[in-house]
Image 1 (tube, helix red, strand yellow):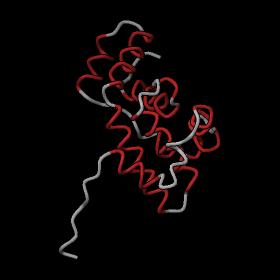
Image 2 (image 1 turned 90 degrees about the vertical axis):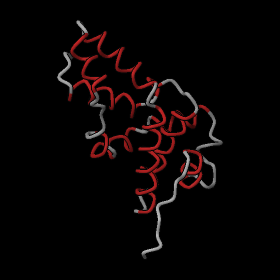
Image 3 (image 1 turned 135 degrees about the vertical axis):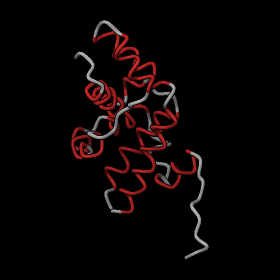
Length: 144
């Protein structure tokens, strides 16, 4: 046990681990969209998504420094553009845990969201990212 060390893996290696058959990576745009928008799975992921938000000096400044709810939301979306890799990694790490717990559908949905982030899918087209925006705004006390 004393010889065990965590493995460093890039996003593609994590994705390959969760999606070894490349179902997600080879999905058509329509198939990927269905994976991203599966309401049953998204509802089952709420225990995770309820605690996923951004709380940084930059997000606090955005929330404090914006006059309207629309401006705050627009700026938070822009901020998250630069955080794609961070959220893709979080989604994939959670997907790996869920896969090992035999929660394949939940794992697949997270991997699909990570794939979409990695491949520059519009953030607003990824419902999990919308949840993160809403939770970020709520946690920061933004006007809704």
